[in-house]
Length: 254
Ligand code: HEC
Image 1 (cartoon, rainbow, N blue to C red):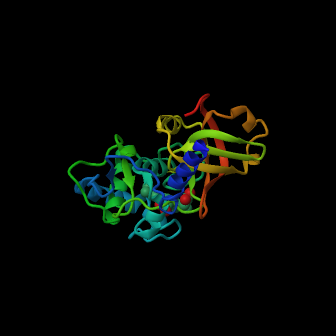
Image 2 (image 1 turned 90 degrees about the vertical axis):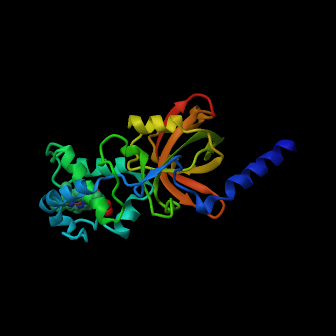
Image 3 (image 1 turned 45 degrees about the vertical axis):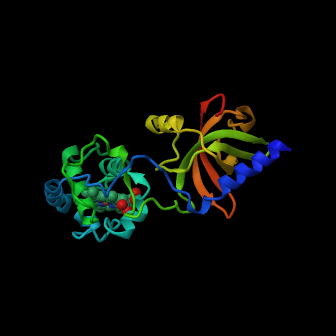
């Protein structure tokens, strides 16, 4: 009886804040509003932006062949991610070109200048120090009023304990969903972040486990600590993950 009350209490606590779930709460957080680039760096980025990016993204970042890189479009794509994610995407994929070209196509300092220019066009304030490759991971991209709930369907990572049987599997003692860019589970820094994440109080129902290789048998991982990647589906009273990738973090949990 006693345990049942505890379970219900935990369920209520976990269910309460779901509609407003925050993506990731890194404290104390630096954000794009903290002055993370220098004004002269952004000014320096204008010319290479015009030469290498404007053709597809517009001279005023309004978007032509490629997406707009300022305002709402930009924020909706990048919010709740870090500058690391944005910088990696740009330096590994832009200027957009057929695969097979060596990357990066432009020197890293110039990429930093260009990204600083994009930040300035999004009205994020300049600060004392230039944007540099160190610490990009600690800068959250978010609206001025703070993080907002991740939209339904967002690609996320969670970590927690696998519980269940038959067709019915959940991850319990899990943390808040963290936005991710790929369903690949082999990226080491990301795996490490999942490993280091403290146990939480959330429960996620897993579905589409059949998507994984038939080699993945959840029975073999009962009670293990897993990192799960997939699309977040938020429902009135629960959160689900449509699973795209799973990796074991530890044999015991939490
Ligand atoms: C030949 C056209 C082309 C050029 C040149 C180009 N891009 Fe792109 N860019 C695209 C396309 C197409 C996409 C969408 C691809 C995707 O999302 O995977 C894109 C996506 C992006 C995105 C993500 C979209 C978003 O909403 O934020 C960013 C950021 C970006 N480009 C920055 C740059 C920067 C910086 C440069 C210059 C160094 C550049 N691009 C040059 C075509 C281009």
